[in-house]
Image 1: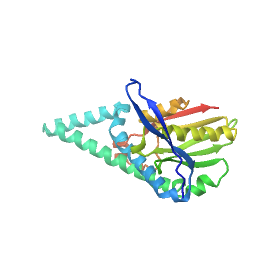
Image 2: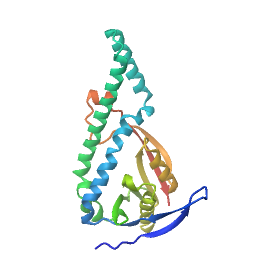
Image 3: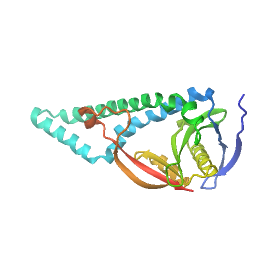
Image 4: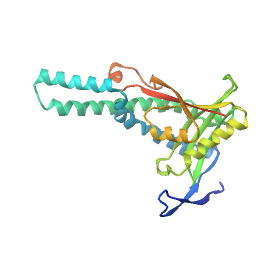
Length: 249
């Protein structure tokens, strides 16, 4: 039976008026019994990307806004029906959600057919790789993986599959997982830790910056694995911009 190893500490809020008790998460290596809950956390984390991509991501693609506005104006001129102004934008948003969800589901299927479907094989057995879970209040609430790349100058570790249960965010789980990867890299003598994340995730960016990572570049139009690249998908699902972060040891 897993031993509960949680420590309480008191942390004063910035206004100094009150204190609150928080838990320090225990980060340990993945065990086969964790498989179902790890996959659930991974699935829920991916599904959060659907509204981010479909709606919030629009501000990163002004050309899409111009395209949808032009479609509305042209339809209004052709049909001369004012209700088009309300119906067409709503239909566009529904289609964006549909195609975003379809692409994310395709990415999920791809992941489950590879590393996330067999964590033991892909992360625990190969040398230079590992997969950890964060435990809080006796529950697995977060995940992260590290994959070593010796071909890089001095060697590098890729941080991936970072995901935290939405109910346990802002509890230090992400920081604890990130530090575990940094400790792993330092222990095995890797020169740097790298990761890629969508430009639509400001909370994740703040976490990585807190851990000492620096953004070193942006890949425009990153192709999400699982996309079909049909014409309608290209219109209603715009590729994410991926930001690359690096921390040098």
